[in-house]
Image 1 (cartoon, rainbow, N blue to C red):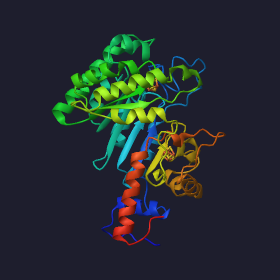
Image 2: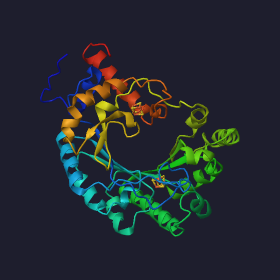
Image 3: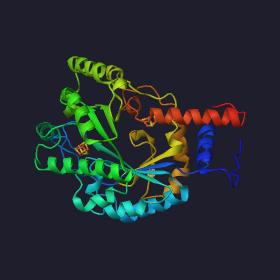
Image 4: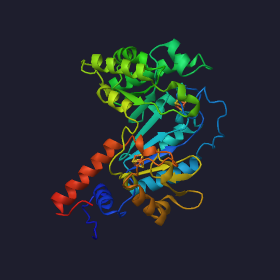
Length: 361
Ligand code: SF4
Ligand code: SF4
């Protein structure tokens, strides 16, 4: 099938048609950038910086501002809708964070940030320009915060609490940023769920998202056991249907924790919609799945990588995520893009079957 872009056809439409026909008719909708790998915290559950990991791997340097400007220019040409600043560390630690946000901002684009809310006061005005902020926070009080997040930097708790109040105040006054708390469910944190629900209600945050924990070798002891899962199920029964002032996903959690392959989508369309760029210049289409690597900015431009034969092959290979292979880490079993993939699938189905009278592949 040949799809001609009429002047009225949107880039979004071209992306969907491309995903359905396994061709590239437009650039990605969303870019994820890992701009820095340093973090002031040592959260016990962290797969890179955990205080339980003694031999931490050498970390790549922060992404340069000139690299980020190149990426911003590609995002403009592609009409990318969203840029998410993530990190194997804390993005606001980047020494040029304010310039980065300015370089990536555009009126047609939303900037999202994954942070631990340890940003300094000088960064606050720039954080206020961001549309959506996800804060990793798994402790509702000082004692547990210091134990879980920051055994070595006790003073940081006050900064985090001040910043959370600041974010909630911005939301009330200006309508943004929308803020969610990401709460990782470990053996240590599960008993804190009721107190965390109450804390979020008091603080006026938009959303509390509970997230299953995926341990590495050193953090294996934090994996919830049967008793913890039972306790969590009791909390879910007691609190999930209560009228909270914020969104949460408590109802989905017990089932997810019981199953090892919690969320493998039947089809993966991320290769037509997303691109992840690491601070070492490597590029893949899924931020989670290292097997979706498609090139390096040290060798090719972003556009060349996106349209390359290698990218085409990797997209096709991962369109149907294969079942667990013991020889390879099974990232797709813990896919965080299941809903997104389902949504893409529905949009593709709708356009092809209703508008064009074609069968979805
Ligand atoms: S804030 Fe994030 S990157 Fe930093 S230690 Fe905690 S989980 Fe890891
Ligand atoms: S983890 Fe999810 S988004 Fe990533 S390749 Fe696997 S199925 Fe696709």
